[in-house]
Length: 274
Ligand code: AMP
Image (cartoon, rainbow, N blue to C red):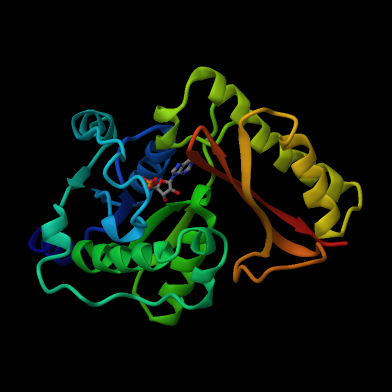
């Protein structure tokens, strides 16, 4: 991979990188398509990264769909698939990790200790291997996006991070590879996650400024749907993710909920200026 990207760079070709864990849906494809419109070559990495999973998480169960992923990516021009093994990325003796700082301790980091550090480490490795001019990340994983942007700035990494909007199903659920584990009725129940985010936006548009009060309203509608367990609802300043109590400025409203042991994430970013 390194020799190939060096050749592209020597020839003046621009390279976009889309890091993924595979099992593609329209969300992944939107990132790949965006990169293809902005770069000569798009490298799509497919790597289920063990260092971002905790010991009790679903690493071994994570869906693999390499053949169909390749077929889906082939539909987009000038795409190269990079599909390393765990031993390629973490050979014997591997011991160096990136510490992303306090941004890693909140939200997903609080719920999944070590997760954000694992994401940071694999992304730096992918940046060094694929040498992209631009890398594409979905707002779906908003903390990951914020952390990567911050890390690129802090460590003077020479690439641009491009934020891509959340792609939703027809019923407005944020698309996720984990939907493969859910029954149609679980999926229907999961619609309440985005409903609660829309309710938050409505309350804020109508003048609500108190985080606690808005969280209570959100929890109220989620708790009306059986089987949907809130893991967290959080309000953080975008994009350093400091926790807030009063709603003002650019804010990430995010949540994780568990349905039938499947964790789903969703978020919105709002900008309250008055
Ligand atoms: P993953 O394979 O889950 O690690 O995701 C790879 C990339 O796709 C990440 O940057 C995600 O944020 C992005 N992504 C996943 N789901 C969606 C979605 N529904 N809309 C937009 N981007 C997404």
